[in-house]
Image (cartoon, rainbow, N blue to C red; front, top):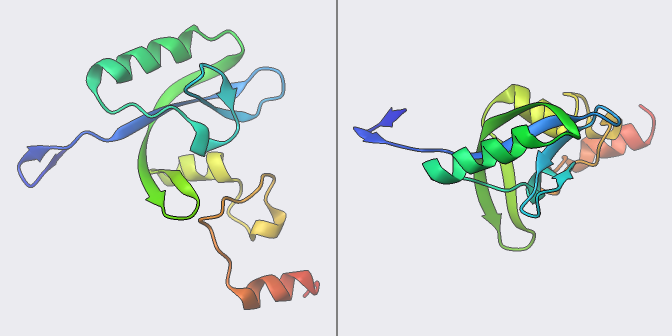
Length: 125
C-alpha cells in the first residue's frame, strides 16, 4: 500500500484455529502454536513472509491458517507487544469487545482500564 509515494510493507504473523480445542493461535519462533500473540513470529520481508506462510499451512494441528498484518511496538518495561491492524483480528487475539473482566483470555498489559471502571465492576455495579 503506497504511503507518501513509497511502498510500505507491514509486519505479518500467522494465525489459525487449533483443532484440539478451536482456540485462536499464533505461530511462534520455535515453530509451535501459541495462544499469546506477543510470542508470535513476525515476518517483514517477502522471503520471510513466504516461509512463514508455508510453515503455517503445513501444520496438521491447526485449520484456517492465514497471515495478518500487525504493528509491533516496544514498551520499555514489558518488552515487545503485537497489535493486529484490523479490528476483527484484535477481537480474535484479545477476546470479546466487552469489559476486560468478562474476557475469555487474559488481557495484555498494554490494555489498561481506568481505575473507576474496574472499581465499578469489582463492586458488582
